[in-house]
Length: 268
Image 1: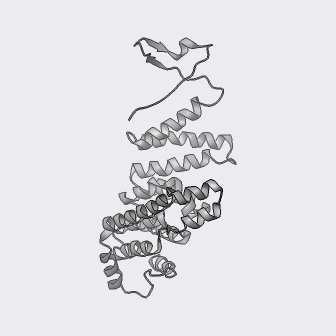
Image 2 (image 1 turned 90 degrees about the vertical axis):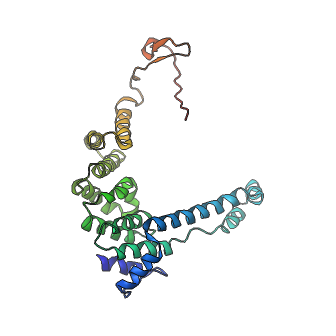
Image 3 (image 1 turned 180 degrees about the vertical axis):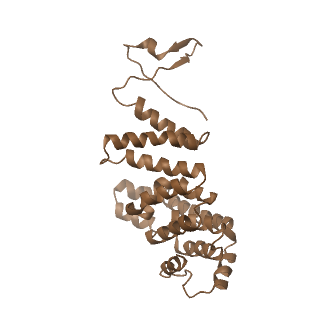
């Protein structure tokens, strides 16, 4: 697996090549300053790239081109903001994973590659290594939290297997919960799924709530099920009990048969 992953990176300019010895890999990983430092470096570069695009989008020249309907001119101007070059970052994160091969310290590097790699083969290789060598690591929570988006990274043909591996192989409840949650939502949103399959998927959300009790994920799963079961068009609205602006208690059911406008808002 390690050899396969390094070979895949051979095709990236500046990446670690297959012939590089262990000392060279460790040196490059050390030069990156460790995972936290490397993550901060990546975040700073990403923010800088976004700000460059925002600066052009907010310029008078860009606005004038858009007002004239000159989309080509606007696109040409926007191209002056260079997109973030992911290749050197992929090489650095891979070097970190290689330097810590087989240890817990490799997990965050591999998770980053799995989630951020721009080529599917790199994401697949990183995910394979995580599932085969680090399935019991609590660090896989980072991967599990992005479970809903992994399909685009590993491909539809591998996605279900990845989710089942996380749900059935990890000893950590929250990691299992995220994987099961992703499985349930995938089935619920599948236009080809039968009514029975969608009902079974909805039941999986109860398991998510139990596994992730007290977390934002549990709240989200519970809310999703409530919406599907109680807030669909044609269903009777759930009763609401509250105080009006004068402090008088009321119930939504008090207004049955009348036109009612509900305005939900928050202040934070």
